[in-house]
Image 1 (cartoon, each protein chain N blue to C red):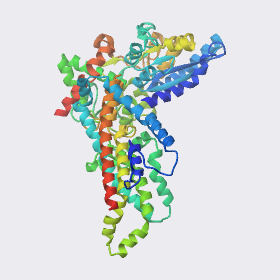
Image 2 (cartoon, chains in turn brown, cyan; image 1 turned 90 degrees about the horizontal axis):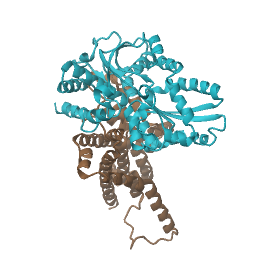
Image 3 (cartoon, each protein chain N blue to C red; image 1 turned 90 degrees about the vertical axis):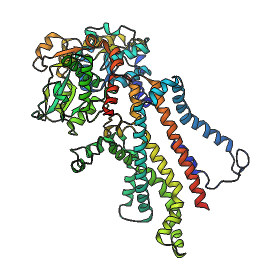
Image 4 (cartoon, chains in turn yellow, blue; image 1 turned 60 degrees about the vertical axis):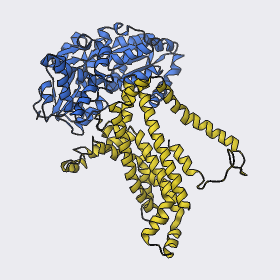
Length: 293
Length: 340
């Protein structure tokens, strides 16, 4: 899923003129490398994913509806995609802020801060889930202050969002950072010397330039959040219709030795995820064409 | 799931070279696929058996243990994990192996060893906070408003299915009808704030996160929580009616024969019924089968009336279908709770 958005993000920014299947270039070896690309994608992405659909196809339509589109499953999709979207939005805002600070300012301990950003990548997600639950439960460091205020984080959908913010943090920061660094302060200075206010510089110069990269980061954080199981399971409380995520329903199906049911739910999630990522990629293309005009 | 299987396969991989020299050389390897809370138990049992086997035959036994949720372990065997014996939480999970891979485990496995192939039993008890502030004595107290009950999700946890059935049995006995049982269990689950995916998860939620007034747990897990998670912080309450949990063991014949380990694996499972192993079992807070050992430890394990899965619920196959499968009673309870 993320491979797709990365590939699009890395493709040349403005529509290069090509006739037929491939643009002529002086660079040799297209056939070989493209062959490898296709074979690799098939092996790593397409074959496992098609197995999901083949297994699902083994069940009848009514069976499929009963498992994958049941009331319980629908509310689980809502929880999964809703919390992932909320977390990706929060990460979009604060990730941008962190990227800005890391690129535009020099301060003591910058390398340490930068390393901290990557930590959620390295940590086993179950550890993150257990740590966050311990922190936010009624007897935890933060929970003891929040719960009396009526803010329940652990064992609610809000807890899921918190866990997903944690694991999705690096995506936006790391995708926006190089683009911001690339723009350089000169462009801002140029805009200001031409009479743009600070707000105008931000709105008309910086944001359009980083928007495609920002969307990539957002998409990756969203995709990661939708599929996340390890950390969420500890903090969610897993109450049906309230804080039960779709990946848990898949595990539940497996627990009943119902492999087809599990793949049916997985197939629905795949289709929604793919549609979302496609939409974000289209947005990206649109943003890119605007930033060039 | 796949990844888990691969990990397990990797775990098992070191056992493979053992099959060629299994009988000739002085060492044999066994892979025991077990469920979560038996880590400590089998560590001690394995050491005792290895000693005994070595002195009897001169052959050293090396054990590889794999622990995990009971259903997960069963699926690993289904997916081809080359285990010699399965020691799981429910007969249902071993049935699944024999139904789908009869070449590994022929039907009728449960009659091959004494006592339904369950060398020890356990039951379901309550763990409450010190001083029992909510005054919880029996099942009826769990449905009182304001009492929070912690139990895992029966859809994903074998232990939780025992809890559910015990509660159902109480509802049936006190109410006299299926409808009464259903309403009792529905009221109980309305008091459950968190549904963890496994028994250990629920113990953590109750003991470490401070959630809930009462934890419904395996007896051995309750003993363990009392000892490991703070002596004097919890009290155990035995309800008037509970359920006889019989975690079974089975020799995975197809695998063991191919690996040339059938004889030692069979002896290993039979060893579980000897007084020596039964003593270890009792020390780990599982109820021993051997009458002499049981009498010795009768002070630890209170007498309690117990439902039986085969007699009272028609066996795991039908219980699973009626209560826990999709659209079963557990699901309908949650749809009901939601609509309120």
